Length: 120
Length: 287
Image (cartoon, rainbow over all chains, first blue to last red):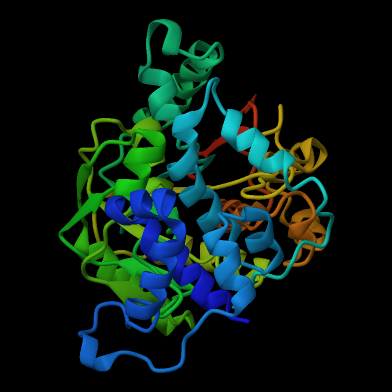
């Protein structure tokens, strides 16, 4: 299990407007592309310095492809990163203020304390 | 030596800028009361007539990342660009440019290291809303040079709450020993109870109003003993999964000093979170 890699995905996508759109529209294509090209890149280093060992588990990959924020929470992805990116993708569909944010919380009602550990 | 003319602790609500500047149907019903409270809070800084602002906040995974995560970091740069694309996207925050006060940055770094705090530093730091929200609320002219200090309240493992208090106490002493005639305000922002990305988020109030009530009492009365007795890294999960940001309030209680009662205390019960505003005048209230 790689909470760090889940967070790295959420972090690198959230800060790039093009990747945000691509993840919203084509999640399977985008997650597959990201894992094969960016998962092992050391940020701020050229490609020759890439890491060699980072990969999603099948469960992690499917949670990302499925836009499944509840599963990401269960897997210990950082909830701030998940929330920020998902608001960027789906708040635009709101028909009233905070509709998406409230629904996002309601979908997580089955979680109780203690929440999954987010330490990396 | 420099004088500390105000110590200020506040929540940093990224929606304030949009709420306070919106008009007509877009203006939320709580905006006018919020603006009134912020205007009174701003006056507490204006009256102190500062020359320099030390700004304590926490990067929200903008420039600081898990491949290289500092616990405490001091900016030392002549300028700081501010706010990030995703803050503009989600909160409507404007791009900003703030001047730095490098002499004070250097002094805090040298003295902090010598006092046993292994401070990281940055010579090129794009700051985020934990610092720009209090600029917007307290000094919207954004005309004073700053020293940003970032704390890790976000990416565990985190320092202990007592370490935040100790750093605050050290910052107070270090700034008072800065060989300068300048007037310094020390401003820090954090959270009361807060849930982000969990089932208790975006409720009609903050996730734990009882924690918020006790927290405001601790801060307003400078009650570090009770606060340190009741707050731990483990206990802070209970009021809401982002409540570790309260440790920046504890840092500011360290700056203000044990037993120091705040000269200005105000709160605002909003959806999702309680806002809280505190000002201390270490040398007495300005005339």
